[in-house]
Length: 103
Length: 103
Image 1 (cartoon, rainbow over the protein chains, first blue to last red):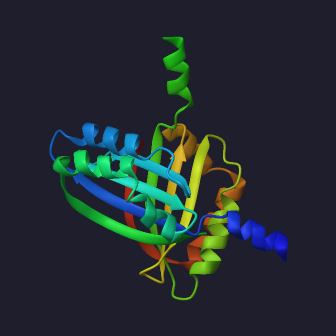
Image 2: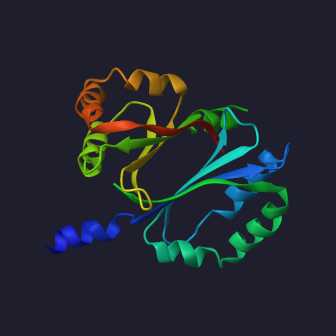
């Protein structure tokens, strides 16, 4: 049982998919800020940022976290706070937002 | 220049986010089929399958591929064909579908 439990523990248990709408012409800058701010976050397994092919203002982010708590804690990290501070003014709004349990 | 070119080549250039609606009660079976069928696909960098927390029938898949062509080719792989064959009857439909360029 310890084997399965240990394997279970190493698997991410929390995931997020979010759509951010950048202000027109600001998407590349916003992607750079988001990517920059997302390095080395404790408990983060994946942080995939993508530019929507069909919608020039849309950014999609898929995140994988060991736990929901690890994600919540990351929002207090200085680098993430900074990314929010500099990114917020380039954002027009949010779209799809999904929490998921990784399969 | 070769250094940047080589780094560029190793980065995935194509991404997909898709939402699949399972028939009621069939989501877990469908997730198992999708996860099973998605091992060892040439050119695939990430294949993240998640169960939507707020919608009991919704599955979200984030995929990262070295190229769009690698993704297209994967649809002909026997294991993927099999996943489609066994998965299709458990699907009620599709929702969000986005192509993106990884940042």
